[in-house]
Image 1: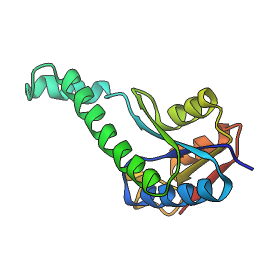
Image 2: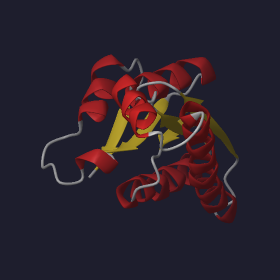
Image 3: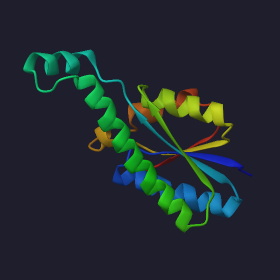
Length: 149
């Protein structure tokens, strides 16, 4: 049925449920898993505000280091869950992209045949409707998308 499942995660509690479900599905179908987390580009407004406040020197470099560190933690937790379940996995951090764009690009590049993701991410936890990134993945993905609420 499925050979390679991409599971998107942002480290949120809801994304953790998507990880668990994706791992169970991979185990049931014999598929391998690719975990992806995407860190967005730091906005020009945030850069300007940081420069005005002189909060840090070389703030863009510090942002990128913090984003990479956060991504490593998120992906390590996902990898540990897959290993505990005996599922083969790979982890990918996509920096400086919109989440939906990074998820779709990774799916295409890795030849995944299913995307598993949460209905909304960290920014959308208070929303009742699907998050904008999830809607974008649903709109542009060439492969099936399993959305977990």
